[in-house]
Each structure stands twice: as C-alpha cells, then as structure tokens.
Length: 558
Picture 1 (cartoon, rainbow, N blue to C red):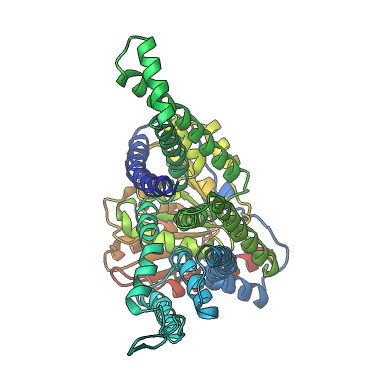
Picture 2: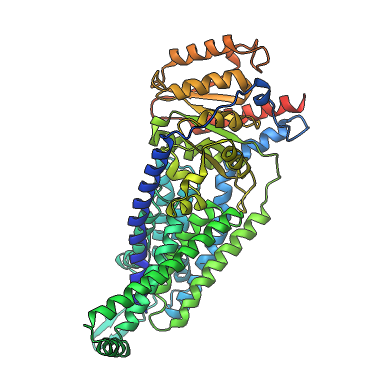
C-alpha cells in the first residue's frame, strides 16, 4: 500500500502538471483566437447620462473611520488570511504529530514532539507566499526563520540523552542522543522534499488557476488505473485474465489492454464529474479560488505524510481525512473569531495595455491580492490575464468546446455576462474577479457597462504608444464619461507621456457639457508614475483607497 500511495502521490502531480501546462496553453490560444475575430456586433449609441451615474451603495458620507478600515483591509487583509490558515495549519500538524508519535515512538519528550510538529507545519510556509505579496528579501527572511527554528529544535533534541550508556568489559560507552545534524536533515528531506517539489511544480503560478481541477481528474484516472492494475496482476487476477483470453481465443494482451482502457475511461468520467462538482461549488460560492489552491497544497503533503504511516497498519489512512478536516474546521473557526467589521464593497476596474504581458499579470496579481479584500475586480479578459483569471466553469466550458458562450457577441450575451457578474463575498472574506470575454468588435460596448457602477478605474499605461489604439479610445472614454476622482493612471519611463497628455487634453476639450469632467482641470486626474520594472505597491494601494473614499464621499453628499 505504501508503494501504491507513493506512485499515486508522485505520478498524479507530475501528470497533472504536464496536462495543466498543455491545457492552459490551449485555453490561452483559444481566448486569443476568439478575441481577434469579429461577431458582427452592432454598436448602439451611448449617451453620457447613461455612463456617469454613480451607484449610491451608501447614503452616508465616508468618514475617517471608513478610510482607516479600507486601508487596513487593503494592507493587512492578505496577512489576516495567512493568520487564519496558521490556525488550521497548527491543527493539521497536531493530527499528524499525534499519529507519528504512536506509529514511531521516541524518547525525546517535548523536543521530539515539537520537531515533528514543525516538520508538519512546512506546508504553511509554502502557502503564505501564495497568500501574501512578499518581496524576495522577505522570502529569504521567511524561510530562514523556518530553518532557524528547526535548527534550534535539533540542538535541543541533541542535548537529550535518549540512548542509555553501557559497559562492555573495559569499554565504557556513555549515554548519548539519537539526534544528529545529518539525521535531522535526512528526516526533513524524507518527509518534505518530495511533496515540496511536487507542490512547487504542479501549483506553478502560470497554471495554478486550473491545477485543482486537473488534479481531480488525474487523481481519479491514475488511482483507478493503478488499483485495477494491481488487481489484474495479482495471482487471482492473472488467472481471470488468462481464462478470459482462452475462452475468447485471443492473445492475453488484448483482454488486458481492454481492461486498462475501460478502467481509464470509467475513472476519467468519474474525474470529470469531480471537476464539475468543484465548479458547481465554486459557482455557488461554497469554495473560493484561494481555498481550492491552499486545499490542494495541503492535500499533496497529507498524501505523502500518510504514506509514511501506513507501513505497518492501513488504518492510518484515516489520518488523512482527519487532518484535512481539522485544517478546514480550524481555519473556518479562526475566520469567524476574527471577522472584520463589514464595510460597503468598493469595486475596481482594471484596464491596461494588453501587450504588457507578464508585467501586466504581475501588477494585476499584486493589486488583486489586496483589493479583493474590499471589493470585486472587473476587467476585459485578454491573453495576458486569461490564465490567471480563468474560473472553473469557464475552464470546463473550454474543455467541452463551449467557451464561446462566455464571449460577448451581441446585446443579449452582453446582458447575460453582466447578470453573471459575481460581486458577492466568498467564505474566506474575499471578493471575486469578473472577466468579460470580448470579440474585436464588441469590447467597446462592454467598456461603458464596465465603468458605470461607481467602481474605481485603474489604468496601466506602461508601454503605451501610438500603436495602442484601444487604450487611446479607453482614455478618451474615461475623460468624457467617468469622473476624474474615480480614475488612476499608471505610467513609467516606457510610457509615451506626451501622447497621454495629448489624448487627455483633446478629450477634455471635446467632451460634452453633460460630462462629469466638463470644466474640470486635468490636474484632478490622479496619475502614478513608477520607475521601469518597479511599482511601489503600498503607495499605489493608498492612492486607490484615497480615490475610492473621495468618490464615495462625493456620492454620499449628493
């Protein structure tokens, strides 16, 4: 059983990684291909009055308390999630520590127990960088802290003389400790090295959005295939296969292959239904993208941890669901115990230069980690963000050839996409990202509906140049229809600032008297200028928060 679990524990992440990389590449290509086509979308004239109305979600003027609450959630929200998972991680580690103490008894007293608990806490140290935006220096400090504590525990355990001394003739061997530096290293590597490598590879940020779904499919297929394989090649199984081949007058290879193919097909169908169940739970807001990702991470480690326990007794298999249940319940209780004071959600619209690619993706991931603690994020999906914003139901529709139903191709599909926007909060207290899939002739119709809900608009203009006609249109539209107090433009040395100034000035000069910015100076438009390759996240978040508070204060005083 231990060998079988090792095969499943290693084979599943490896196969899932390869399959995820292939599928996310095909998905991104499908999105790019559909975006470049036209759907015959007929534009309807949009009056300024339709797009300047701000939704009044709160009648009270925003005060200092609200501003402080927003800033606290923006800056501390990810760390709050990390603290919640710490409680769950401790519960998870304690379950495995207790099981390991029974399965592998030791005489190191509290030091040995703490070493085991610290080893089983390792998944948490991998999870936190997924939850929190950490610069590389903080990464080093974070992992150095783990190594330092483990070393101190090893020194403590090494001072405990758990091996008694004895005399053999004239030779006197004193009492000594069973703990050595190389033993501590070998212990940690034996328990955590394999799952760490598998987790870092299979949950790579490039395809981690689809990793939980693909892992569910591959786990069902590989587990079923391995189970039948072991049954078929047992003594009784071989007799059955040989008897069947003899009765059908076939070579033994054919019924064997047929059995494996049927098994793979049946368990793949089971995996497909598991994927659908995950997508349904996500759509009904019982799961979030973050809880899925973190759950898969811990499940990978729990599978390998359990493998070391089942050497002598298969009943240790019960530890795996027990530890996962402890993780889920403890994390949920921690959230309820530290629930923040609710504030009215503040949405964010993210516009950008599509050609930025990974630069845009990095900025979006960083901002979204913080902003989703106070409101949802809206954007037009492009090839640059398609792999990081794909939702489970969208990915399943892609696999079943129905991705086009998510694209805005006419006014009916536009209304459907707007109705499907999810602005609610997930069980973990975070809001969602709502992406709109647009064809080459439909995105201009989506833009007014995207910004007319009172959300703050963040536009990334890095690498903006005359070739970016779409961004030029968006800039002009923002000036004509969206109050300056709701907009923030990002630029850096790669931005054609003269072109930006020219577009803004011309748009302001030609806007209608009914425009919210008519008669307003361009100085009211907030612009953030960063250096090449570097955006100061804290300063940018503070400015976004300030804009959100100014906008809501204006709305409340109308």
